[in-house]
Image (cartoon, rainbow, N blue to C red; front, top):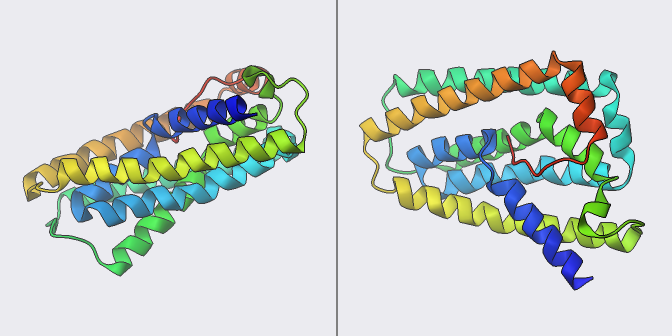
Length: 223
């Protein structure tokens, strides 16, 4: 069981470390306010990660394969990514105060992280398939204990990654000046726009979606 825990823990680290929308938003917030808002984005994203993990591992994830449920979530995710891209580009044209953050900005970053994870259509597909793909870790007939261990290991890795990501961003941007922060905001806007377009393309390609749902997923990060 310990080997299973370690495997799930490593899977969680890889899942969280892969670049995506949450990471782009972490960089954006960290470029302006440092460690605290960067950490707030990461912690907020745990809300969606935990929800989709529970649904997928308890078998409820099978219901998420229905277009009537997945499509609205995907549309909401695309719309939110587009809004964040626009907001980042707009903010880059304004004066950016890189001296630190306050409680209000930290709360806003927390909400942003949560919404990004909750409206992430890739999380829906990933966990809907993962609930029936435990065999990839050597468990072909998982029981409640296996599900509990997997969830604990995955969320432990996710919490650890929150602090790793926030620390890395803080170290990279601690001495960032206004010009560098502005460039970072524009790059994040471009990344978020690209992710929105990719998500939109997936929603408009039923064949690609069906393949993801019927094939054990490769590890993909928080988009």
